[in-house]
Amino acid sequence: MRNVLSAIQRAIDGMVRWLVIVLMLVMTLAVSAQILFRYVFNIPLGWSEEMARFAFVWVSFIGASALMRAHHQRVDPVGPGHRNPHGLGVPGDPGLGGADGDLGRGPDHRGGAPPPGGAAPMTLIIFFGVFFVTLILSAPIVFSLALSALALLWNKGMLVPQLVVQRMFAGIDSFPMMAIPFFMLAGSLMDTGGISTRLVRFSNYLVGWIQGGLAHVAILASMFFAGITGSAVADATAIGSTLIPLMNKRGFPTLFSASVVAAAGVVGPIIPPSIPMVIYGVMAGVSIGALFMGGLIPGILVGLGLMVVAYVKAKRHGYPRETVRPTVREFLQATVSAFGAILMPLIILGGIFGGVFTATEAAVVAT
Image (cartoon, rainbow, N blue to C red; front, side, top):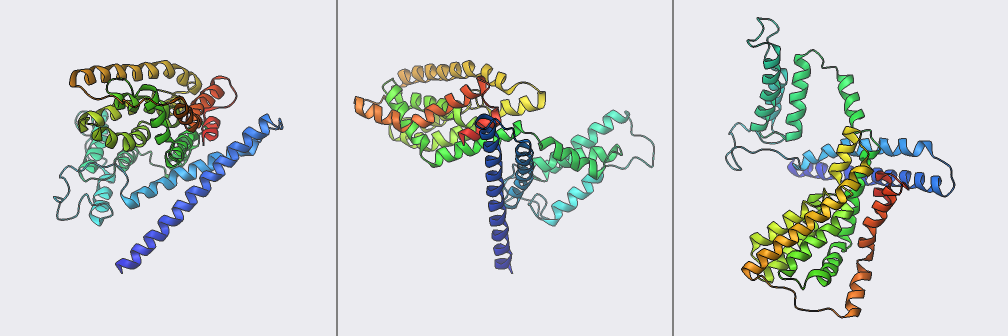
């Protein structure tokens, strides 16, 4: 029976994966067609943006399928192997569903006297009570937030299913927000294609000769990669997987290597394109292009500041530099190899700042 359920689970995962791929392809083609027809044929396509938005909504809601493989972030207060014997906190266990169901109803004060302290304290008690109790039960954080909000709406008598679904749809139905999956996809494709390795090699030829060479390489490569993905996690993952083992072989302490890569990854959300800037721009109604322009210089200054700190640490502890000087031919080969990754941020930022395309269209171009 377990083998049958596992086979069904794998089949569902495969269907979901292919559905997401098809929807991402639909989004890419729709936005690409919009750019092509606007600038080449001077014919605006009214349906392309709507089709891309609907596909994006589907991709976003299908993302909840990550729960099937326990990919959602959660809090584990008792640690693995020490869970409640009744199964509370285990994803998919009936005990968790029962607990969530009880919590969703909230304390019932409607039939008796109003709670002491007025309505406002009780509202806070319900909201934070449901939130923290579900966290303690190790429910995924996203569902803890959702359950606490639903419990609050129920207590206020405002829990209308149609309205909740409508607001969920409207919260995701945003064309600028589509830039997020496209920038993530662009970073993933470039990392899979070996772009991060080429950037490391190019950066090594530029700054590897400085004291603590590989630390500077990690920072500079992260700055280049940040101009493609806009994500700290993607930045640190792509650069760290290549450079941390190499730094350890060169005699750098593991703690120092990991710290440099983690600190350099923080530049990802500062140097445009930046995923947090896209989210803030959509939520606050601020120009995303203006946010990108405002983050460019600070991001470069943060990277240079990190290089100064790395240099001081390297001088103090005698960390090595890369002594191999490349020939002109080797440097040109490395430049040509990484040319696409170097040019991509210029295309993205130049297109946005020049008014050629929006942040979402720039993300499609990067993909």
